[in-house]
Amino acid sequence: MAIVVIKAGMLTTVQDSGRWGFQSRGVPVAGPMDPLSHRLANALVGNDRGAATLEITLLGPELEFESERVVAVTGAEFVLTLDGRPSPSNAAFVVPAGAHLRFGARQQGARAYLAIENGIAVVPVLGSRATHVISGLGGFSGRALRAGDRIPLAAGPRPHRRAVALAADAPLALPAGHAVVRALPGPQADRFVPGALDALQSAPYAIGSSSDRMGFRLTGPALGHAGSADIISDATPLGVLQVPASGQPILLMADRQTTGGYPKIATVIAADLPIAAQLAPGDEISFAMCTPREALAALIAREQPLLRMETA
Image (cartoon, rainbow, N blue to C red):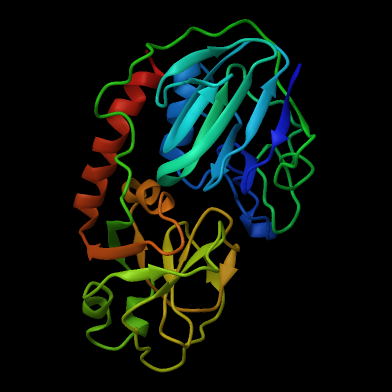
């Protein structure tokens, strides 16, 4: 059984939790831009947290289901209809065989996640179904979906259904065109002039039109280097802010390269990466430094309601 793509949307890709363990060989991780909403969708339909979902960016698809399935849509809010009738976000619901699920106008956020009971059954590559579009690796033929594609669905017993309504604190609070995210200094904050971290926090940065799943190109206060803007290439963590010679930072996201040769002034904390992922080109992002203790406390607070759902 499969789902048939009637309309593909702007950038709809298959994503699971990512292709971890191969960065030392130059293979990017990929995976969901907003891992919280990805996990939440899977929890709602009873899937394992690492099951593949569809990540839907800015303009959504129309999909036809060949068999009845329980599904859930989380993350960005779209006008969601099933055969023309309104359907809920952040809740599990049944899609009958032959029905059309349509993502209409985007209302808030940038990326939605569609989980389907038992998951999507594209062939894993290096242990993952995640799509890395730049290299053409994984997912459905290594690319975004197109009209006419048939996405295979996994067979299996119907999983235990979660409650239809989510707890109020479970979904991500979506940003409305601007977000403040917390960050930790470094790993190369010493490669910048005194006051660079203050400059980073002094005003919002605009997310440029050339931003993508690899990174957000930001325009705002320039960050001066203390010497050369080049370093010996080293690992590029998720959420790191690397700064080329222009002084304009680049926020590295899910499809980031495995290494980079620009100094990295700060790293967005794990708890706030899903918020950044829900911003679109033209939105603004502000940075606020925090301590490791604050970052850990924020991650625990973010994880607790999600873990309760995953283990219910």
